Length: 145
Image (cartoon, rainbow, N blue to C red; front, side, top):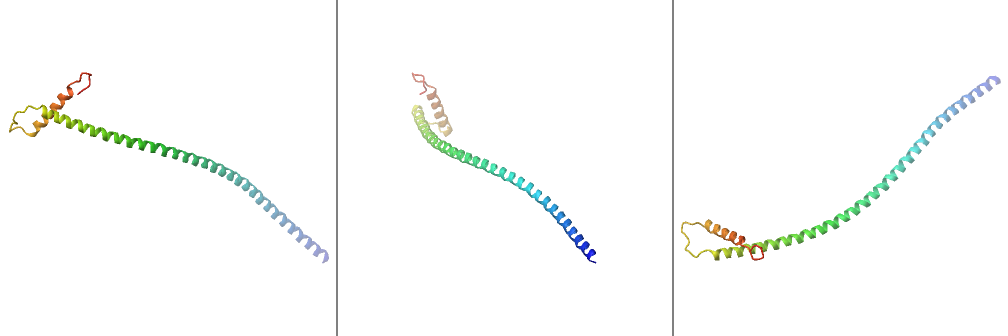
């Protein structure tokens, strides 16, 4: 009996050692996968850091571009406001010239009695014709009167 008890104990130890070796092999394969995942994770983190740095540089460039656009837009708005004021002044001068031309045309009209059948349109035509005649005249230096 002692001999069979020794064999049973030795067999039990052998089975337990085989289970331990199998479990160690399983742990070894899991550790290899974990190491591989660690390397891929480090590579992914490195790529993420590189992408973050590129994005930060791009954001800095965009901020600089926005500053430049703001300055240019401000200058263009100022220029547009000045141009608008110049156009208003020129329109006012044009209105003054038209008023003076109208007065000149009215003064140049013959002092005959107005025809009763002639509507106001003929007076407007007369003003337009007088203004055209006035603009067709030339000064001695070649500029229109």
